[in-house]
Length: 429
Image (tube, rainbow, N blue to C red; front, side, top):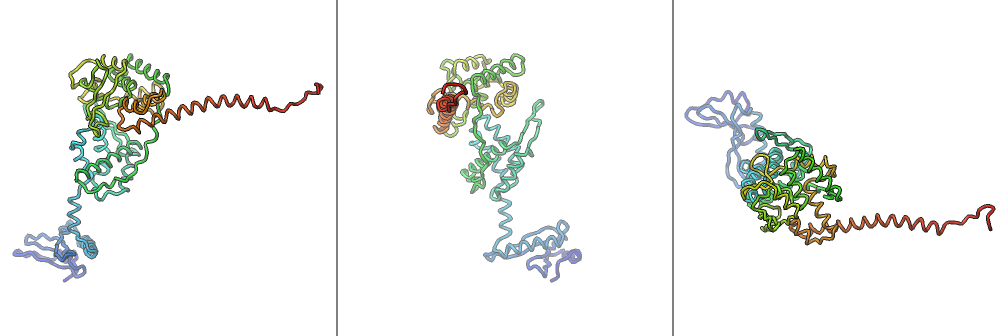
């Protein structure tokens, strides 16, 4: 048996009546299969740990050189020597579920379809524009923390950011940043957990991955003056036709009710009862409903009722705050950024910050955690209680500021009482 070289392979002639093998004399099991048609392929033949004989095709001559085929055979020989079965492992890799397959299955699932409209749009965007491009080809069972770190860094550094045309006059702007990275990796983690529950995969390799905290959400509208600047800016922009009335009114209602952005953007007429001053959102239309299965009831103050009442009436399934185009809910975020800057509101405050603002001021006014929980639709008391704790700390801080002034006065008074008396020259002794 010769060492298989290019000269040997080129010299071998096919037998029109049968197939035959040329075996290498250096690596046992490495050989050349020659078919009657003249096709020549490199192979590696071995026995599994159970004693079963198997034959792997390494590639055709021409697509592989003899040296490349020899290296592949030598790698398989090492695997066999270690008690492994190269063909079984190759099959497992081929059949292994990829991250893309899991994510696409999730987008078709009832779990995804049961989410609120705005949440579905956000999740779909993160999946299609961040997660699939960066991690889609990875097999789930081979996903490692280092892969997640690289994906996090790529999203954070804007490597997946893009401006994409999605319609005749519409652009989708996909931004990066640390917040986008955290939320995308959390979505991956929760989606893989869903896949485990559905028995699509056996384990969640991202279950212990830490994305870091979002930071404290303590950026709020501090006082009536801040709210005044917000409402005055909305009035001015609306009068100058720099903002559509439905968009301005939706922002006003969020500020007045503390409702979530998606709850108001996706508000339909059949959710609203202006006679009773209540909005009733079905479980699928609000965040906590997916877990509790319960509707959420939002009380409307008179000003919010008036804002809703002045919207053009539509069919029961129509959105209260009509979008400029398309069938989806009204888009608020882009315009909010302009409003925030013009109204000179705190830099870190988003539309969700209006919700935190209302809860914080309710707590400062003496509302109990249970009352805040009811008003804002929190799923558990702990979320509401944090505003009560914040209010207590805020009151303490205000008290300390007031006490500081009083203490300064006490210090002055004390200094006067204990100051050394120095006789004046020429004065009475």
